[in-house]
Image 1 (cartoon, one colour):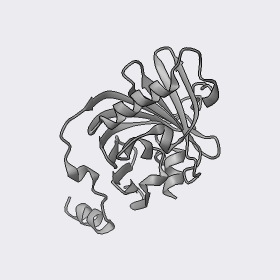
Image 2 (cartoon, one colour):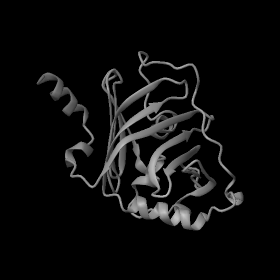
Image 3 (spheres, one colour):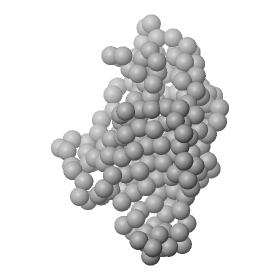
Image 4 (spheres, one colour):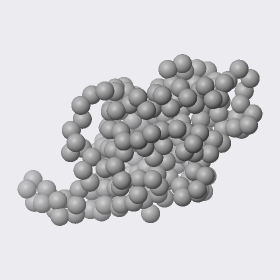
Length: 221
């Protein structure tokens, strides 16, 4: 259940969200075996691994566009290995928290918390302790264009359905956005803005709330 939700949209969009006219489209990517001339795939992957493994903590604003074109905004906090938090702005009633092993999608409107293994989400490749993209994933495609490197990955075990395309800014290979394509071909885009790294983050950000904690919190408001 959690993998399906994460692959589809990373959230269940609020009906009040704005709906642009077009659904999300991914940039084109070259097949893994036919990387464009001049792109050293092994060197690029090594540089990406070095950048990602060098992140201890990260904070950014994000814009998410769902398959139907509706959008949501919020703040992302990440502490490697294994911990992240997507805090969505109103009116979206969703919060996503990973505590190192489990990822949970909390819906305050429905008063539900759905849990699943972090390994079954596409962001596992960003959060694992020792990132090695060539070892951890099947490289579906790679393309360098207009100052960005597009890297498309698939889970070789098929535990995680669909594909994810990460977009890195060259030459630093800073992560700028990603596109998740689910098993039905639906695409969700998440773009990062005002990215900061190396700050201290409160460990409580990554604690998944229990149902009784949420009830107590509502009573004490």
